Image (cartoon, rainbow, N blue to C red; front, side, top):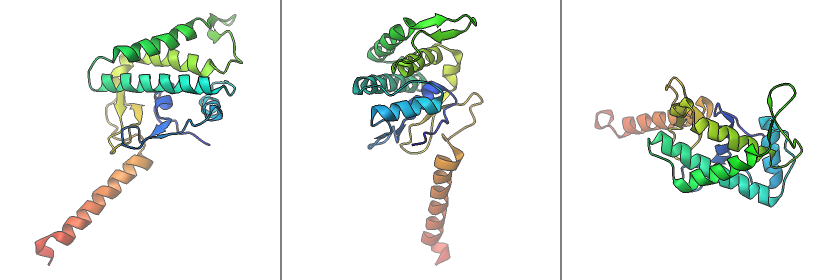
Amino acid sequence: MPFMFVGGSLPLDFTNTVSWHAGPEPYDHLQTPQDLADWAEQAGIPAPAGTQATLDAARELREALFRSFLAAIDEHPPDLGDVDKINAHLRAAMSHLRLTVDLAWGWDDQSSPDLVLWTIARQGAELLASPDLRSVSICQADNCGWLFLDRRHLRRWCTKEGCGNRAKAARHYQRVKARRMSPSQR
């Protein structure tokens, strides 16, 4: 299944593996360990399919990151429990981070299914601790809940083609409906 990468940042794209995250019926696109491996492959993370435990840990990390980003958007401190979960994943990730002979960062075990967790934990923590955190926005479409970087603070929707078009169509429908109901039109 092709995943959408519209967040402008890998950890935001990871939180966006839930559609309608802000609504009453969110849909989790990570149903199986293979779904997680497929997402990782499409994201450029060479992680093989893991176990149900890897998937459960990924979901836990994703939700802690999502709530922490929402807290930042609302200009509140994140929940301590979420920070603790992110830190637990970050500690595991950092124990596998190595400096390579190319003088670049790399992972000591490129074949581990946890590579996706390490990558997301590290990049998620880096975004939460960076000035770019002020640029994280949430889609303004009802119940969407997708997050994205908006450094110029001009975007309203995760995608113009998706939520933007739905909002435009809804506004058009309301205008047409209002014209039909207008007493001057009768």
